[in-house]
Amino acid sequence: MDTILVTGGAGFIGSNLVAALLKAGNRVACVDNFDDTYDAAFKEEHVAPFMADKNFALYRTDIRDLAGLKEVFEKEKPTHVAHLAAKADTRKAVEDPRTYISVNIDGTLNVLDLSREYKVKTVVVASSGSVYGNNPNTPWKEDGDTDSPLSAYGASKKAAELLAYTYHHNFGMHIVCLRYFNVYGENNRPTMVPYKWAKAILGGEAIEMSGDGTRERDLTYVGDIVRGTMLALDCDIGYEVINLGNSHPVSLQELLRVFEKVTGVTPEVRTRPSHPASVNEMYADVGKAKRLLNWEPEVGVEEGITRLVAWFRAHRLK
Image 1 (cartoon, rainbow, N blue to C red):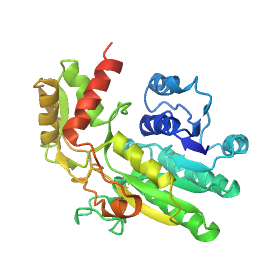
Image 2: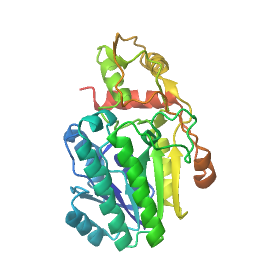
Image 3: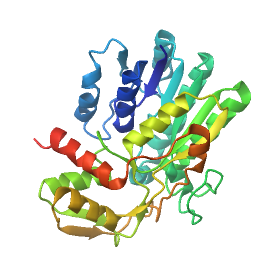
């Protein structure tokens, strides 16, 4: 049995990954600081199903706390690490860049250095399509321009990738950086558009749309992301940066039509100006993921939103 340490394991993607890893027969050590980015009660709900599992251990530790994190490594001796913990809101990163740099860079450095010390077989670092900024050369390939991120969030994710490379270069570590694209689904973060729209539409309220609704996002179902992350954990390919995206951009207007079809509701739409940190289009080329991980997305947007809405009805409508 492998022991996999998942940082950010009580969060959106992390909790879905923990569930899949446990189902696959692994021991999982979850590290999460339950910060106040959104209601911590949601994270408590995410991990509640795991607490009785003898193969699950929860550590309420901040990845910036090197001593506390080292205690987890010493106790668990993880064979693999999935590093998903991060501050992850591009707009808030413009207002509070220091926190994003501290968590996403300093915290990543701690994870990498302890993984080196404890001879972890493979480290997967969650990066983001935000590193591409407004690169006009779509679909974005991993060797494309990433020198112009639009916020400290994208910049911190690029910096984490570079740190990861230095650990591979100097210590021969197997590290895969996965650039996640616009993930949505069960346990969705409340700050994200799919969650906000599900909440508004199912609650009979108006939705908020930024700009004229033509901005496009490469919405990727969380189950596909989890599957790709598990494949990356199971490989030893040196150092690689790999896109994980649906590779099918959808505009906000198109997303609204999907929600209307799935819910049977036509909501009132209120518009607001686009934030300067919001990119015009996100579009992942996933050819590298297909070659190296034998991965490609399986869940289309309509099916994914159907699952999100069903989850929201079951867990958030009270």
